[in-house]
Length: 102
Image (cartoon, rainbow, N blue to C red; front, side, top):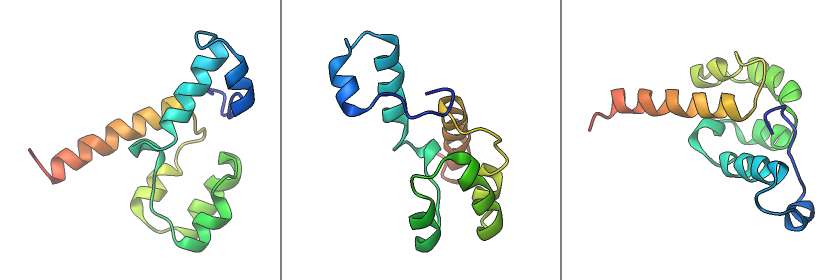
């Protein structure tokens, strides 16, 4: 959720009314996980080691082991939450439009 937590478990989500605040926040977070703003390029070993780690653990590893500008820019974020994912997705989309204009 916006505080960086993962939200409700699948079982908790099934037990909550769909319109509950917690259910809505969890569904939003789950939908953002596989969007452009939350994806980056990593070597296989780094990706495997960091895949489900919290941002406080991932961030220094990105700075230490990745030289790609896209990852160095990503690591400038002190927090990784829904807002950061959305902003990064918009920035990447705008950058892609500059590279590949319509």
